[in-house]
Image (tube, rainbow, N blue to C red; front, side):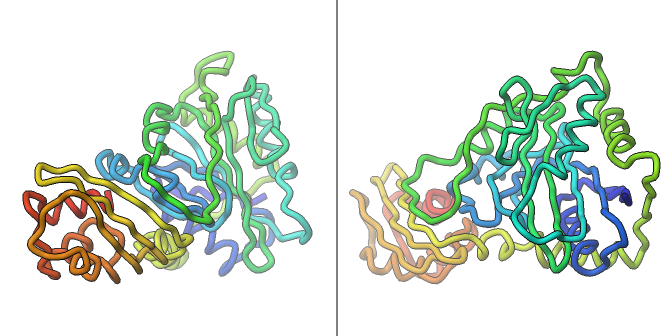
Length: 324
């Protein structure tokens, strides 16, 4: 097994590193990574961002939102948790989690944590989730990555993954909200997050494991992949499923309800209703919104450019209602 220290808490860099060593520079043995991130929400490949996360909360608390290449549900990660990745030659056939989770379970057991595989894609302790896992294939490589809740901020996790109660209809895959717990609370003796990492890496890599050091050339290419495939607005929103959403704002000048059809992150149809007063008709508001990104700044600019004038409601307030 080949261990690579990513040296970064940037989720896009780490996803870029996964992609690079799976698709562009596959090594001659299984690659193992153990890494962590700044506060981040990782949305599954087939999920709809507004259904999964509170985007306004994430923005206010500087939580990054990123779409990963694997399926499954949304997870929250921060410096108190760890991620692990295996990149191995693909064996074909169905997705199999057990072969990658077996060494993780053994390593946890040696630390005194009696974890179990729940039969789908999670690890649990006393019935509570400590790890979610997902897989995808790139060429002839399988990428398996999973999370480990060590001392994660569970209150922030709950707040950030509790989306607004809007009326949203889509074909995106919804997350199952599981009861969770931190590994640190189940250890027989306290260890720091760094000690936990070191012991897990030693056990999983094994005595014959080797270390690969990322070269300057590797890093330059990884940074490009990180931005192009994971760090852009398009990578997060334009790859999600189409959806319909209804959002209501209540203002001094009256209430406004926006009915939107969104595809690839862009508003393709819009209508507005409510008891508001405006110097323009509803069709003008709809035309202004149609074709713009469902993003606060883009919506505000579109409303201002379209000359939308609503009594005692600013373009910024309407944009906040529509796009968070």
